[in-house]
Length: 398
Image (cartoon, rainbow, N blue to C red):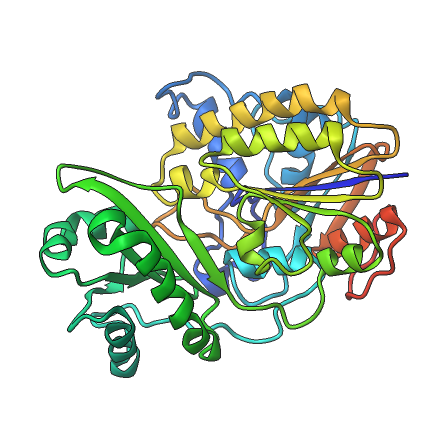
């Protein structure tokens, strides 16, 4: 009986989104620009030379970049042996929930709420509610910011006052950073959980707990991050598969993105290395007919947002090497799809996601191009492969 593995390489876009200009991202191309930087010798910190991704490129990654954006990515030009194409998003967002929900067959039917890029960014009633739930007289931040710099800026005052550090970004998010020991991890998680319904009613997609430890001179964010996401407006691929009596596995932050809806088993780790160990194990042990839905987030969080081209290239090459060891262990009848949820071009201006098409690279289902597809086609394809009725708008590309 066939199995399916949907592997999201978080933020590994391939350019060419037809509405990129609406988001200020015309010309962004995460994979294409990383490959170009590597070929030019501009990504040599901790690595050197052209971008080396022989296994995913062998399946069709370079061809996916070409069909998505018209860009010939240096060193990604293999003759594909897998199914390959690219997907275009219709949801009006370049964020994690929009991309994942639509890949799972549910385009977002509303416009997300975004906080203005000014200080203060949050309305007074929201600030008052945060203070009431936290038991504090004020908050810190109240602006658009990146996580590490705003913690650096407010660390000492946070320890002195106990006020939570609240910030947002170009995405529809409300993030709260707090020290795990002085503020308390359980207190932070409870604050985010209790605040989430108010923000979800505003159509803010996620409330994110961002715990950290250490001192002002030496601190780091921990693996205890938790996302409190809105519920999807209709059943997703996970629900379709589970409802048909098949096992569903979620690896990484998939459980948070889908609020554990439709998920039988959750596999979380401290790093993408941990998560790949789980994926390795599931390739060997997952039940016949099962769906494994995995997200590898460090491309985005560690290298995309900080605009670290060399680090992003290293992560891609590491991931490709692990894929090469994984592919021979797929069983006859298995389908494994590698894709992304949005872009985060590390050569682009700013520190936010970029609106891009995403690659579709498939192993286990023969070879050939599948053209430009919709995100929702991924869910319908997997449902068809598993013999499960699809409930979304997509069309199978098998």
